[in-house]
Amino acid sequence: MAETQAAVATWTVDPAHSTAEFAVRHMMISTVRGRFSGISGQIVGDPNDWTGATAEIVIDVASVDTRQPDRDKHLRSPDFFDVEKYPTITFKSTRVVKTGQGRYEITGDLTIHGVTKSVTLQAESLGQSKDPWGGIRAGISAETRINRKDFGLQWNQVLETGGVLVGDEVRINVELELVRQSA
Figure (cartoon, rainbow, N blue to C red):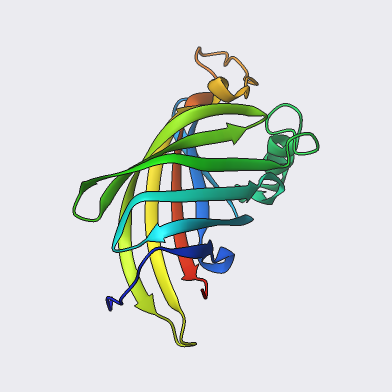
């Protein structure tokens, strides 16, 4: 990946090349994965050192896709995300700290289902490069874990054999391709 000169700038999320994914236990024996295709937002900072950058990311909850239409419909319902009442998931950073070469802790306010909690993501800067159209792009990969019940996502079903249908812990992974905006 070619390194390019950069300074503090506004970088917008390229939704065609960015993903927000999640994974949660199903019936305590397997993992269901899903993604949101509707992702937008911006980061203001320097990809040579993201320390002190600010980020605002918005996810269109109706874009949830677990490759199973009935499950996706249930996730959009009031049992889970209630997209009619809470159409977006948002993340607004409050602090970005460098923890190693190209690695950062990004702390911020995550709002899901109308509930806002502070979370910390472990992030890696994937570098930057010129694109074929003369623009500059940067990449960031970040992950965290949350308890869905902390965000009001309470629905579950007790299994006959013990345990529950849906796990509480949700692993979240975000892959962002960012496009530098002209000054």
